[in-house]
Amino acid sequence: MVVFQSVTESFGAAISSLNAAHLTDGVIRRSKRMMLDTLGVGLLGSSTPVFNVALEHSKRFQAQENSSVWGRPGSFLPPYYAAFVNGVAVHSMDFDDTWHPATHPSGALLPALLALAESLPTKPSGLELLLAFNVGLEVQGRLMRFSKEAHNIPKRFHPPTVVGVMGSAAATAKLLGLSPAQSMAALAIACSSAGAPMANAATQTKPLHLGNAGKWGLEASQLALLGLEGNKQILDLESGFRIFYQDYIPHHLAEVSPTSQYRWVLEDQDIAFKRFPAHLGMHWVADASAKVRAKILANEPNVDLNQIKRITLRVPLSRYIDCPLPVTEHQARHSFQFNCCSALLDGEVTVDSFSSKRMNRKALRELLLKVHLENPQDNQASFDKMYCEIMVEMDQGETYTARCNTFYGHWRNPLSQQHLVRKFKTNASTVLTTDAVDGIVQIIDSLETIPDCSLLGSYMQFHKHIHGDEAYYSASA
Image (cartoon, rainbow, N blue to C red; front, top):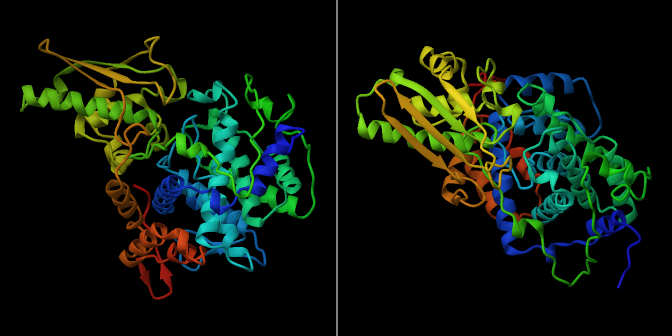
């Protein structure tokens, strides 16, 4: 039995030692769902203004190795920058998956892994991609479980910029076949690129967090491959990874042997998939608001919603998603009030809810002024424990209430495979041909048998609006 001298050493050994035989059917199934969803929201996000800015910036850089830009036929960038712009696309509308403890795990991993896979002389198989993806997930999940603070909705920094960059380093280290010592170095190097403030939530800068996490993790593993070293106790020291979590208490990972079973975090903690592009907390609000709207209409089918006198939302205390009068789409995606009023007026929240036309409706702006928030002490700022209660008071004195404890799409109430595939196809078909959309679904479905995972990069460029040599793209909704 190996006795590790440090937590960091145990992580380096696990990254290097985990192999495809350790993957279980459940982990493969869940991670393929995550990949499909990430590709879909990334394709939808490739039409957003923030993606366009990131792409224009990244076109300044050139290299001998190039990787595909999603949704842009014939557009290629050096792997670091392909990882960056595709990661930005994934988070550009806040439509990507969310884990517990709180982070967006896939957007920091898949763009970096696919960019790296395309650039390697020997292309990795689908099974190798699945293994590397799950190694990156595992590192994120383990690190977050060393802190109770990490279980709550974040206040100080955006978690993907901390655990995401470490996960990207681990995942790409696995795909590169780094040794335990090199994997430790990759984690140490990545840690020096970790962290971004929550002050940039609800702005165009927030999507850059996922792009940078993937890019800097990939850069860290490439530097480690070239022999660069860092602190060999980066996960142990108070001045190392512990600076991000004040209550951080790390533990050694168990020794991984080639033939032993391994218990993955993903087996015990499923993923939340969003039904519309907004902060995860908005999904409780939207579902509760849609329920109370149905009650109002059942009692008063011809009601004028202008007759609403007051709306009370009982939600957790979280300042960055308390935005009474959002001006931009990014603020609206992080506004309890906006998502409540959208669901009350329309019965649902959709991609189009965040268009300028919908946001500037007179009825919505007037309704926003009637929303009041309450923060009950038992309503904890945790995606695993929070709830939303809504009370609507009408001018004539009627009162309607509803509550959402677990929305559809949450890990306790996961999207069906049918609905997940439908979400992917709806998102991807805004950019790709029908054949390409169906082809990606088939590749992901049988990914563990695919000999060359870089095939995905080709499918991600089959844009449906091609005229001669010209490709053109519509603006974001």
